[in-house]
Amino acid sequence: MQKSPFVFTQLTKFISRSYFNDLVRKYNGDRYVKTFTCWNQLLTLMFGQLSNRQSMRDLIAALEAHQSKCYHLGVSKRVTRSNLAKANEERDYRIFEDFAFYMMAEARRLRIDHIFQLDGNVYAFDSTTISLCLSVFEWAKFRKHKGGIKVHTLFDIETQVPAFIHITNAKPHDVTAMDVIPYESGSYYVFDRAYNHYKRLYRIHSCGSFFVVRAKKNLKYKTVKWVRRLPKNILSDAQIELTDYYPSKHYPETLRLVKYWDEENQREFTYLTNAKHLTAQQVADLYKSRWQVELFFKWLKQHLRIKRFWGTSENAVRIQVYVAITTFCMVAIMQHKMKLSRSTYEILQILNLSLTDTTPLVDLLNKTNFQDVKDQYSSGDSCYFKVLILIVQIFSGH
Image 1 (cartoon, one colour):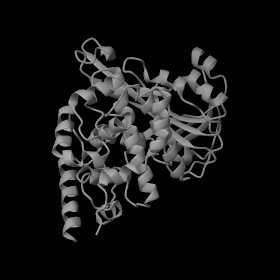
Image 2: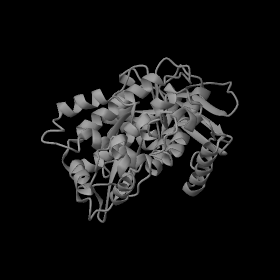
Image 3: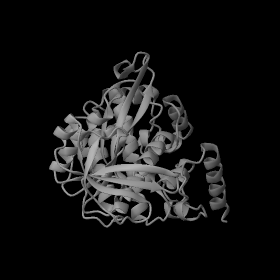
């Protein structure tokens, strides 16, 4: 009986090598390269991220332990620390950036799911800061003795996949990243309070798009119209005009203000929106869905290794972030095509310990009794212990 390919090899069938090669040719990525190609580099980094390698030394050690399998894994017959470091340092990060954007578009196209039953897409926009050692990452100066970058992400709530990524130095304020968002007419954009900038919000309004943002505590306004009969947990629903000089100049039209009582957290929230056609509960539900981008950030750091970098240059850091996004999207595409009921995050846990197994993916990911729970932030040790039990059960035939 013929053995199945390695789990990692089965995974890489869900990414387009031909499209990646087109990008390599576009940016001359493989010029003068004889052995360790851009494709080998991509798969090496993906292997490291999926297997939770802590450092480049750890990654190389893992590949050396599986040296007889490296060719069939697609990562080249021999990967050395020097050729991987050189590739991360010198190859154009735009190859990996463009491919990450392609993978995001593919994953979103496949995973369309109209959860909110609205005409436009629903996005949450936020950023995560990744701290870097200033003495090593001198180009990423953030504070006097600290370095860092920000990964600004436009997250598609309904497909559970990023739609847009923007990487900057950690120093600029989050709100400046609103200027590069590719706004779509008729779509909805959900922001935290840090993005409450009226001039930029009015730009969204002028594009024919809708926003929901948490109001600042010092908001000054006058009410011009209000709803008298309010549903449960809606404390106020009114149309307002801003009264401070600059806010009123920057946003000259009326806004909708919704005050909502969150029973679960026993807190009151105040939202501003230009979506006057929605119910107040819909406005609250849109904002509550914003937690999913936080979930994405936490898993990106914990399970796709963008907290510790395998290179010190800006180019190397960008490559690693974009490969992490590509890896996430690959798993999301696989999840959809294989019609798996479990979450993308749970799948990543299972794959972590089985990349060099020859079990068919469908068996590996379906023969489990794990319940997909809401809290997907379990501590690493307990998660890995559960996954280890799972793998043992699969191979023992239980």
